[in-house]
Length: 160
Image (tube, rainbow, N blue to C red; front, side):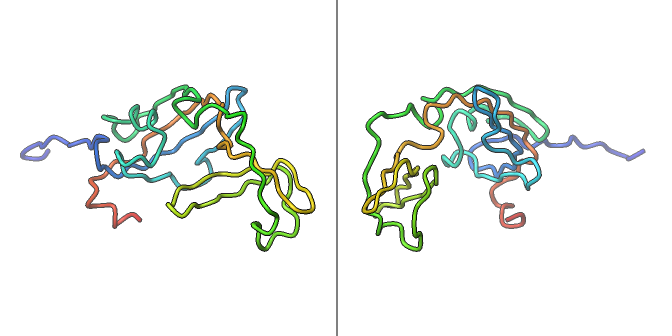
């Protein structure tokens, strides 16, 4: 046996920690919306608004191996659906696309860097009607998250 024993320090999720998580997100009917299953864990820096705030809050203080399950209301996730969020955009704004398909998802980046998701709901010869609600707006999300690892932010370069 060793001459002396030293306590093992378990890293906990805190501000600026680099956290690797595995997750599955389902809507209220149980359909999988997103998952890391079959992929690498998702890595984020805690406290920098990189994930949904209520998930980030639930992970604070957790260590590797911790599992969190929570239900997130639309208000806490991507907001309620806004009824008047339809916009008409000229077809020429979709370069490289001959005919945008109904249901297709696009991402628009404004001059200020703000990202808006657009879902095509109708196409005419001159224009495209898009819904500017986030695709998950109005959805209650059931989230299962497991913390895979937690590192100090200075160690992030070794894993990225």
